[in-house]
Image (cartoon, rainbow, N blue to C red; front, side, top):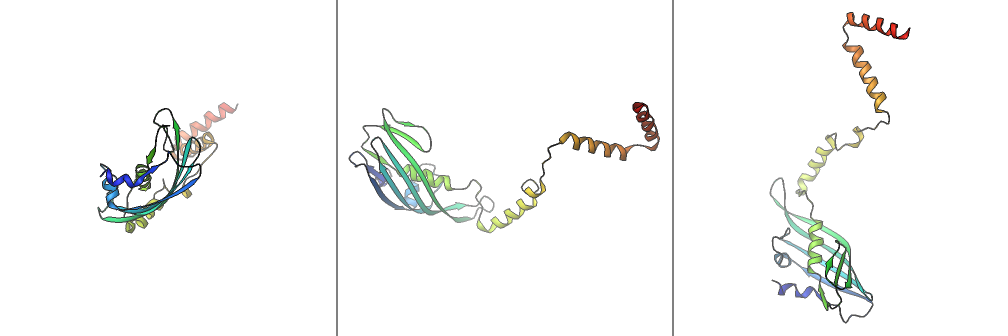
Length: 194
């Protein structure tokens, strides 16, 4: 399987300082090369624009394709289309270090890079956490619209929580008081005013 990914190998040592474009197209065989793959079936077309500078490579990936996903609700397979664009920087330094999703440092002696793993990761990032068959998406949206936690029009914000609390307390106090106690409360309030 590793031999299959050799077509994603780009010799960078002898490249001049300019922009290069590479095109890749693949299918299920690509995803089978990755152990415990999040995506097992799919196809894509990827374009890599590589700009070489003195000590770094600027990689711009444009990937368009679709994957076969399994619906979390019905367990039906469905095709999920995606289109994405990502940037990655490869710097040349003393040792190999992965700083972030967007920056990698490779030894200065590196003669080639394999971009298969970058393409695979970007496609995996495009897969949604909640996988819903398209026939359930409208139903899911309706449920969110009916849920007050998701419906912003039903939420409100107040800048005076103490005033609101006092008003609520007074209204509940007035409603819940037994008439006999109301007379005593009135007497108490009169004493406090004097």
